[in-house]
Image 1 (tube, rainbow, N blue to C red):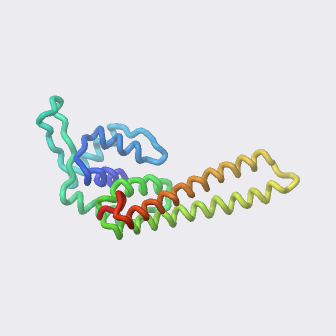
Image 2 (tube, one colour; image 1 turned 45 degrees about the horizontal axis):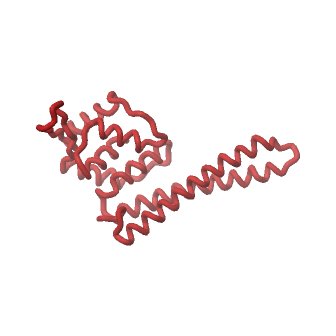
Length: 186
């Protein structure tokens, strides 16, 4: 899973393992720390597969090395960006990883990723809305546990609001892509 983000980020610039770890942590949903014990074996594996090389920084007194994506790594990014995203617990993180690598793919692939994300988001929103309506019906029954149902509805309203915010973001990306803006440079 981390391969996609690491290679996608490296398409824009070389980075140290520390910086890549920070980017990875910020892109995970929910956000969580990533240890060196996780990060460096992934980088080692990518290097062994020929997707990255480490470049010495001669002016760095600590001898820091930066990860640099290879041509094989660029091909791998293209392949990973075209793969469908599974509807599982990693889905949101994987889409966030793909969004970080959007500049590495053509506009048609960018549009397909956004369309897939939109469909997934709409499915979530529909489920939240359906359950919310069911709970609203339950609230009107005399034996209802009003406090529990009210908080259930509030939780679903948060999910709906998040889905609406995601849709607004998708719409804005499309506008900018159609205008050749920051999301659609290819």
